[in-house]
Image 1: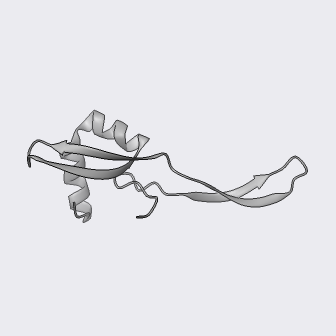
Image 2 (image 1 turned 60 degrees about the vertical axis):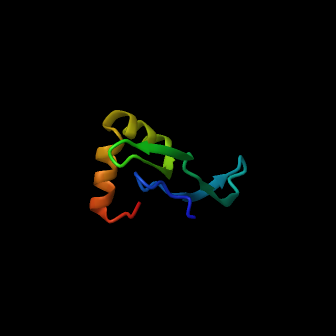
Image 3 (image 1 turned 45 degrees about the vertical axis):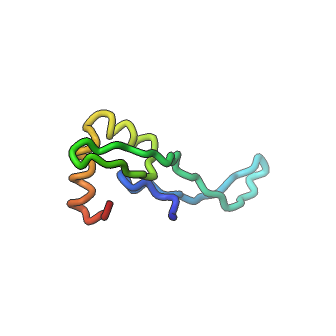
Length: 78
């Protein structure tokens, strides 16, 4: 499974690590992902999502129902 948040779409980004002598080497910044098991009371079932910390805050604020509704509108199958 890819290192991508299922709600926000955050993914790894790349760039350079720059040493004190200004030597460049490639590196990656990985998103802060968590595998979470969430209960959906409307459907009376559990789902497992790979979420970033920002997505967890979004779910806390809006609720799991509206977030899943937006995901299904985008075509994500859960």
